[in-house]
Amino acid sequence: MKGKILVVGAGFAGATCARELAECGYRVDVIDRRAHIGGNAYDAVAATGVRVHLYGPHLFHTNNSTVLNWITRFGAFTRYEHRVVAALPDGRRVPVPVNRQTINAVFGTRLVSEAEVRAFVKRQAEPIADPRNAAEYLLSQIGRTLTDLFFRPYTKKMWALDLEDLSTAVVKRIPLRNDDEDRYFPNDRYQVLPRDGYRRVFEAILDHPQIRVCLERAFDPTMLTEYAHCFSSMAIDEYFDDRFGPLPYRSIRFHHRDAPLTYREGEAATLNYTDDRRFTRETDWSRLPNHIVKDSGYKTVTQEEPCDYRDNAFERFYPVKTSDGRFDAAYARYKALAEEDKRVTFIGRCGTYQYLDMHQVISQCRSRAHAWMGRPVPALRPPAFRAA
Image (cartoon, rainbow, N blue to C red; front, side):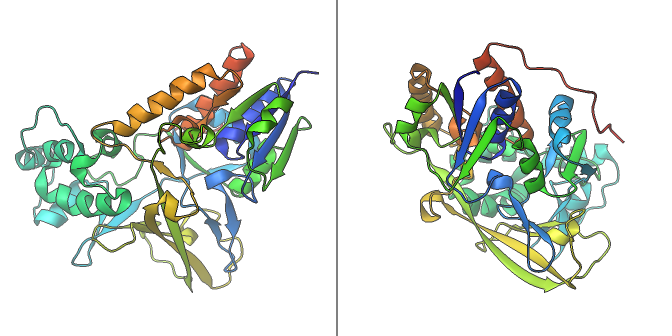
């Protein structure tokens, strides 16, 4: 019997590591200070009979067929292509990310071809050869009108930073279109949701005779003496008692409300608020496939209000990335400290202070688990889903 491993966190990072280690013969104890598995991907059925993602929408999208193969081992998945609309100040709703329809609506133009859109946007853009921050990047791509309308107020409430203070990496994630493409993740070949919810997926991942799960249990350094190694998805600065200062995160307060269950063709599941109200977006869960578990005539809608993680019970969601890189520099000091500590491998968003999507977390954690074991990451069966 191989040595026992401690995994801190029962979200995608911890669950992935635990499963990979267990399948290789290790006994694994998974702890989480929350009362449920699944981390921020946890979902549950509300009183309305509609499944709700308790920590905001988690939409599985990737081009990595190996990751898709891995996750589809643990449940049935259905195709879903997410769409988002933004509410303009005059009440109109337009697609986001920005596409041809959005540009025509905002500027009152009648651009038809991609070439026309490209030329129009080029005239709007400002000549900034080497953007130093998110503002300069957006101005160099789409100009001031679209930047100030779709990004400036949203960024301020989301990050509590001006665009000038935000890293270009944050906005480079957002595609800008010259055509009518209105899918939120148009470049990802695989876009799916678990048919029976993420909670069932996590139950299946952690259902292994070599895995033991203990909830409502926080990490304590004295635990390390009982294990051969630890894989930790807790915040790396918290683990080291903020030795180099705390790493900042943005958090979210979720406001749930019930409403009559109505359906109008073409409505998007998520609505972004471009103005300066305190909410950034709202999600109508009934518009996601298989989320109406029991039709009660009502649905649940969730609005998101960003805040500092210290004002929300230290619930960390998004690492803050500034244009001057000062927090990345602080993280680098923690990373160097972690590399000296051979007892622990850090994983996930909080452990590696990165904005990672679910598929990236799975890939990262499979790689780190097998690297620690000194073996290659095993190949998996062919993709369960192919491009339509």
